[in-house]
Amino acid sequence: MTSSPSLSSAPSGPVASPDPSDRRRWFALAIVMTAAFMDLVDVTIVNIAIPSIREDTGASFTSIQWITAGYALAFAAGLITGGRLGDIHGRKRLFLIGIGGFTVASALCGFASGPEMLVASRILQGGTAALMVPQVLSIVHATFPAHERGKVFGLFGAIVGLGAVSGPLLGALLTEWNIAGLEWRPIFLINLPVGIAGLILGRKFITESKAPKALRLDLVGVFLVTLGMLMLIYPLTRGHELGWPLWGHLSMVGSLLVFLVLVLFERAKARKDGSPLIELELFRVKSFAAGIAVQLTFGIGLGIFFLVWTLYMQTGLGWSALRAGLTGVPFSIAVSVAAGISVQKLVPRFGRKVLQTGALLMITGLLIYIWESDHYGMAITSWQMILPLVVMGLGMGLIVAPLTDAVLSGVPKEHSGSASGLINTMQQMGNALGLGLVSVVFLGAIGDRLTPQQVGPAFAEAFRHSLWWVAGVLAVIFLLMFALPARPRQHLEAGDEPAGTTTGTGTATGAGTATGAGSPVAAGAPADAGDGAGDVKQAALTP
Image (cartoon, rainbow, N blue to C red; front, side):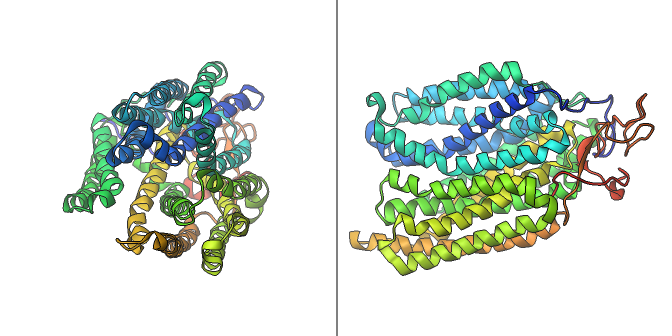
């Protein structure tokens, strides 16, 4: 029996650091970012087209629920497994399998002959996305040297911002244009040329990487993670429709017991053969543990906001899908701009305060939105929404890009797939919890029997009520951010130390530089005396 290596111990054999002279990494970045954008858009693009899908296919309300929920369930349940498979079999290989499968599933969705085939294809789409998405951050983490990751994660934050609101806008345009009489089908078919290009270019430009130590897939861990996720998320996605039955509450409580069993099993698995599905030692990295908590809570806030915002504009105010989508453009631009400058300019100077300022800006934007909605009532216009949306977007941009780097910065490369899967899983869990809370904070504030004249004002009032909840969630996030490192730290790759020295637990090479990829320094982690990495001056972002 062998013990699981700690995150500060070197694995067997050195791992090469990213080559800063290899220009292919920028092509690889464009490819994986495009795939990430495609997934983000696909999560939201369907909502806008639901009326068209229902009219064309005759889908029941339950089928419509599964068209959206099926994707989310398969995606969330498979993320951690997808990340670990990338560690074992290679991130490039799993990325290509994922994007290929995602493209095929998109074609099946676009050519679905009925609601049953569409539901099955959406589940397949979510499962293949779970193979593709965890590899994005892992490939970035393994491909780029530490001093470039701040810039890269800034770009990633901008992509997240664009994807968050581009889905509804793109879905509205494609549905309204009714290309070749296909109605809603182009929202899926548009993925085909993007996916094929990503598959071809990915084979050429993405460099393969995997965990340096031979790992085995933890099948029991896969089962427990999948079971726990399904027991938690399924009742949340179906609860309101089914009237929140008792079995749903029991299932959610039972999921906590499953996750407890998972933790105990993963500890035993790590002691036995060092190949657990989830590296629990990751949570000993303070930046990772704190960042994961913020990610989960942030997902809850966003899950509430984006759904009630859409319902408010389209059902409450009676706006068209296209008008609602266009209204979100200033928000998207603001997120992208703030994400771009936060990592490169602001965080290296002001550290954690930038992320906390982002939370306060989002709260401010929400308060402005609440006041405007109450002041202008049903006569509110898209132009009047620009100010709160821009303020909120700037705040979100200050959070999303630095937070990603904060979570991954202290993670050794051999565990980056597992860590990336955990990050995405926490985001999905947060969103699912937020969507579940919508039934309480939004739908619960609307009366059961409304006349047509009462619908608009009731939805507007429920919208304002929900925004107070989102503001409360962001206040919690502001407090959680105190657990993040106060000042920016410099990542240091193996080979950056002067000749004749060793760093952390890495072994000295002939040139005298450390090559132990398992050490925090070699992995691009923050290096300080507390983790044995030596007294290293810091330069690129780790909030």
